[in-house]
Length: 113
Length: 112
Image 1 (cartoon, chains in turn blue, green):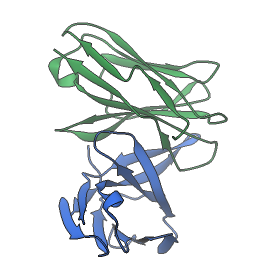
Image 2: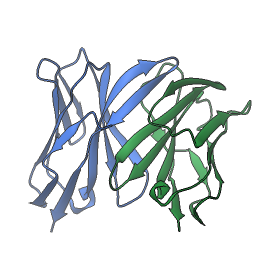
Image 3: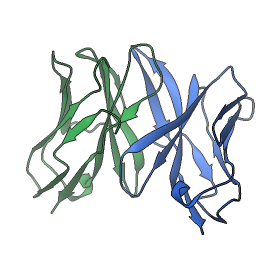
């Protein structure tokens, strides 16, 4: 079952603009991660934020987490055509020796030249 | 390249058959996870192994089973295949006590 619902389902922007994707979830989490997937290929880890953190940055990426609202957002600044992909949030629950991820429904981002 | 390898890349088989998907984790990673990605169900967690032991289970059907071997590679066995089992199957691995998972390129299964 899906834990996260992402909004919007699809987003089309011009190169150079910022892209914001939102993720809402239902249950308690230990961490939340964002992954990117290019057309039917493997998932690439982008950024992780733990439940006691509110904001993290990595290059052109900014992630926020609001545990009281059970929501997160991913901001990609100065987007490029190469950012075109599907983006998934995944909530994490720590398990024995690992981290069980539950993925959202994904946002399809298209960056046009 | 994440360092996680999966074989085969593509698999076409018939209903009722059995297949085995193989995953080699990154060097040093003890945890292996299996996921199924389909159009109607999205990305679903199936099962996790840590150093040879099953540690967490998700929406894995009884027809599916997995194991992790002493060399840490893992296999996912799918039996009595149905049309609805057609999907991308991903394996991921993570280092001990780390939350980030590194995904393999996936195996695309088509059941005809």
